[in-house]
Every structure is written in structure tokens, then in C-alpha cells.
Image 1: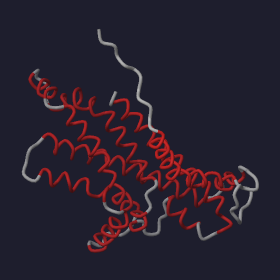
Image 2 (image 1 turned 45 degrees about the vertical axis):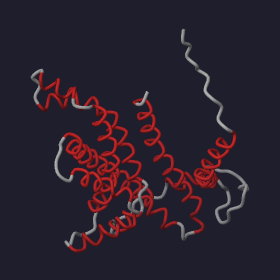
Image 3 (image 1 turned 90 degrees about the vertical axis):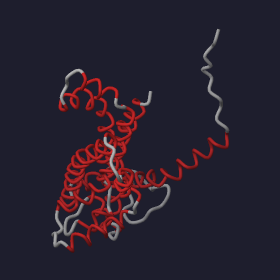
Image 4 (image 1 turned 180 degrees about the vertical axis):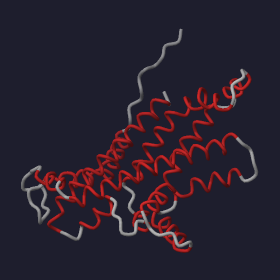
Length: 267
């Protein structure tokens, strides 16, 4: 008889301490910024804060320029995510389901934007738009954000296509289903969670992106740009911390949901 061993080996203390140290290094600055969103002192930053208050949330909510920046960021992130879902899924289907010369090179070019610094992408886009005389507007921001959002969706979709294999699609076609029926009943259900996770990650990346927005926005201000513009105003720092608190929260939610979906699919 074979007995399943449900006892996992203990994690070495050194490895555990290293993991805790990395987590603190990554997230402690966010925690400090979020703490100072509640400080009573609007001019200096001392630790621990002299007192805690929620009044800065009310002040922030009363700023029309903040609401305009928030609305623009949400619109850009939403539309860029839709474009990323369409283009990323189509690109993944073409690369994974077809064999043609240069396929690997095209796959490399599709994932390249996520590896490049945002400032490089922003400068390249600004130069290209200047050469073809495209005026900077809302849609140039969307184009800039979609360049790296496509990568996230593409990576998720192509990984799922590779896990699907060809047997299910071939069986569907053998049973008389046309291309649309195969996509609706076979491909889409298998891709759905990967696309939802990719879309959430794309939205989170677009919402807090600042470099590409800086070089393509013109006179419009998204939320990250608004935060940077407030850093030169010391008396507005508590309000800026409140907005940073909101950005971290809004960004964290879709990332956590995407992580949950990915983990569930791997069970």
C-alpha cells in the first residue's frame, strides 16, 4: 500500500527571512505613503505621524482637477484594454495556430515593448507621431498604452493556446462545426479565464503608467501625471498621498483578481 505524504518540508529560516526582506523592500514604501495619507501635519513628515485624520480624503474628493485626471485615466485604461484584448488575442491565435516564415521573430517583436523602458517607448512614439503630424490627444495616449498592454494579453492567450493543443479544434471541425461555432464553443471557453486575467493586468498597467502618457498626452493630464505635478506643492502632499493611496488600491484589485484566476487554472 502506498500512503500519500501530506507533510511538506519546512522552509529554511534563511530562505524565509530573505523572502520577508524582499517583501518589505518592495512594499514598505507603499505602506509609508498610505500611512501619511492620514497624517494631521500638512507641511512636515515625521515618523510616527503626530496624529491621524481622514480629512484629506474629503479635500481630495473636492478637487475637480483630480476628478478630471481620474476620469481620463479610467477611460484610457478601459479603451487600451479593449484594444489589447482584440489585438493580443488575434496575434496569439496567428502565432500559435499557424506556421510561417519569421513566426518566432514576430513573437519576439510582440513581447519586446514590455521589456523596453517606458521612456524609450514614449520618445519613439512621440517622434513617430511628430513625423507624420499626428496631433497629441486622447487617442495618442490610448495608442501609447496599448503598445505594452497588448503584450500582457498576448502572453496569456498564447500560453493558453499552447495548452489547448489541436485535438479539440480538430474534433470540432470533424463533427461539422464551422469556424465561428468552433471559436464560440471550443476556443472561447478555453481562453476566457486567460483573457480575463490578461485584461485585468492590462488595465492595471495602463492605469498607473506615467512615462508613455508624459510623451503622448499633450495638454491632458492622467492621474500619475497629476500626482507628479503636485509634488512641487508641499502643502498639498497629504492630498497627493491620498491619491497615491487610491492608485495603489485601484491597481492592486485587478492584479489580485488576475492572480487568483491564474492560480485557479493551474490547479
